[in-house]
Image 1 (cartoon, helix red, strand yellow):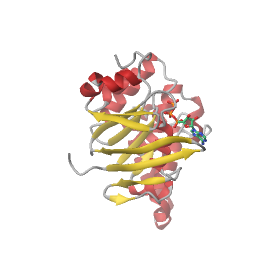
Image 2 (cartoon, rainbow, N blue to C red; image 1 turned 135 degrees about the vertical axis):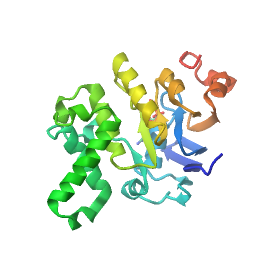
Image 3 (cartoon, rainbow, N blue to C red; image 1 turned 90 degrees about the vertical axis):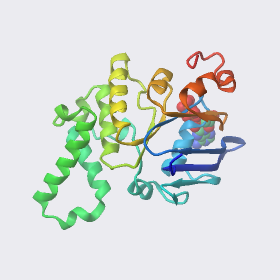
Image 4 (cartoon, protein in one colour; image 1 turned 180 degrees about the vertical axis):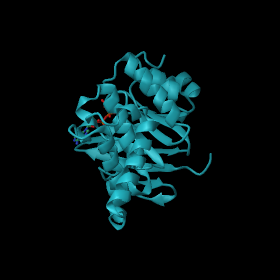
Length: 251
Ligand SMILES: Nc1ncnc2c1ncn2[C@@H]1O[C@H](COP(=O)(O)OP(=O)(O)OP(=O)(O)O)[C@@H](O)[C@H]1O
């Protein structure tokens, strides 16, 4: 494998007596989509929190682009290019789609904007924000208040906000959650487009989407990674099938 963009080794997190991530190790190659799947309560969201920096692991390391980021907080990781898409709640409903994306561009660039003349800074901000909206098919809705967007469009805006951070690895936690069939199809198309340009770590329940999108898949069960492989091998893996017994999505 090419030098991994992300390497997780021996990651552990306990909540009370429960080991929610238990010696989790896997590596993500640059380019394409690496999915993490697992039954409900397997620890996927807890894993994402430890990767993005909102939760400190009890043990283990997270290396990003060759650097140990285990002790770095979320903002520092985001600046290095390890960005997660935020939930709808972080979108400001009264601001336009463009303004929401522009805020993310501004957050990424930190204080550097203060050195520019305001007009030039604003034009630059808006251009970068518009480019992010364009990548998720939302340029035509740039002026719409975020609160007026459909559910699917809000999910697109979340993606645009994450892209505005210029990530080297994009962490997506259930980007299809709550989307109807047509919105799901649209979001899958958008993600297929994005995977040519970005490295993506995807946590998603929709198995059809996962198998349509992923280049590699890690399977998390009761906090442990039981397999990391190409989609065809994961589909055929007896241990994976056993873990999903009763949930016929993988079949
Ligand atoms: N802050 C917390 N304190 C105590 N237990 C927690 C906490 N966060 C998560 N858990 C527990 O850890 C386990 C894994 O939760 P997590 O949300 O990471 O799983 P998941 O794989 O994302 O689940 P789902 O697929 O249902 O979203 C669950 O049993 C959950 O109740």
